[in-house]
Length: 414
Image (tube, rainbow, N blue to C red; front, side):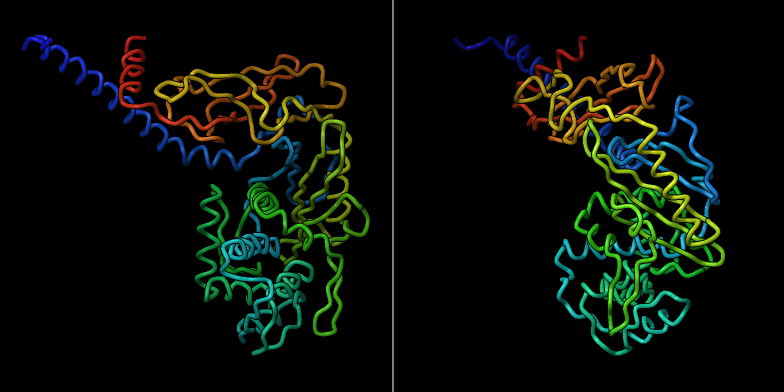
């Protein structure tokens, strides 16, 4: 049977309306996703701040500090954590990040020989931190990394920077772009090694973010940071991180010192618990001596491990809930996290933990596995404790145009 002109007109108008609604909602969804992506990426780098219910931390004899639980992404204690300071050789954590990124991308190899320029050699002559590499020689990347990390060699650091960036100036630009990509607001680098320079600043909090990204994105870097000594050119130098010699659970991370910065240490400790393995990160800035920075860092780490219980809420990839998905090839997705969901609470209060799921409704396809689609709100004794992002555990491709149009119409009349 052939439809009448009026009927064909009605069918065409209805179809056009469906398509228009679908396209309109799809565009709005895309805009919303594009606008929220940068904010989400910045937020993902941050940690939940300590609440009033947190136990009181010990007194720390340092200018600034922060203690964070990397397993639960919680800040356990902090003081002056956002105060700009000289990062000294803690700068080398960002240099290391870019070096390990170049290794991952195949732009460097551990067995590759890099030339030692006069600039790298002369930088090593400034201050006490040097690897004793010879000018106009060639040194393997692996040895330069050990020189930078174990010996804190300024000469090895500059040689690596030139090997990755071509020039120190280009490499410093790369450092600052990476800082922006991490969402850092107060960190600005003027060199790759950390010697005092105008405008070369960071904060305890932002240094903790750099350190966290380094060991999260490049866990193969940790064996370098746990090395207690390294010998090059017949000269043996010990790691300045005294905690490596005192605490078997400490496996990094980096010391720093200048006259302006004082004695600084970023340390990380991993210990087993009933709720799973737990890693803490401590940043102590502006201590009075190498012994003081080690003692104050140890004090923070011991307190962080002893004053809290670890509560595992969900395993990795375990669904927390299931949500309706619109305009998708399937109509639902499982929500959870690709890592275990754990929180730490003051010791003895694990039974007081409750959770509530909130979603970014309506959820519109396509969804990618790992995409942030909601939040898990954690309360302790009825008070807000932590909010964790929830991810889609499934890939949900978009439906065909008719399915999208139908769901668009349903959404428009809800």
